[in-house]
Amino acid sequence: GFLLPWGASMIGATGVGFLDRWGLAGPFHLIVALAVVALVVLAIVPNKVPAWIRIGLAGTILGVFLLGLVWPYVFGFSSTGPGALAVALGAAALVVAGVTCLVTDRHARSVPPV
Image (cartoon, rainbow, N blue to C red; front, side):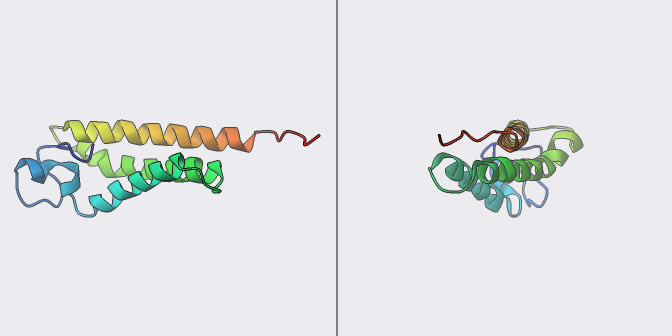
């Protein structure tokens, strides 16, 4: 979604060309895109970080942040681009997955060792 146009113009962009309308044209959007990549790597690569932190907590926080970031492009401007819709759907999926992980991990019962 960050490589597609988000709308007719980007907040903070100076031009109106294609590269001025895509998701990475906004100020600091590259940092957010790198955070998404880091979260994907943290979820896929086996590590000792508990699932409720790497998927549940981090996914929920990043998903809510992305929803706030894309909100003006989806509901504020007259023309919404495909990138804004893709990021909004991905952010909603992150929030749902994060909350589901938090709820199921909290109520999971440990298997007795014997």
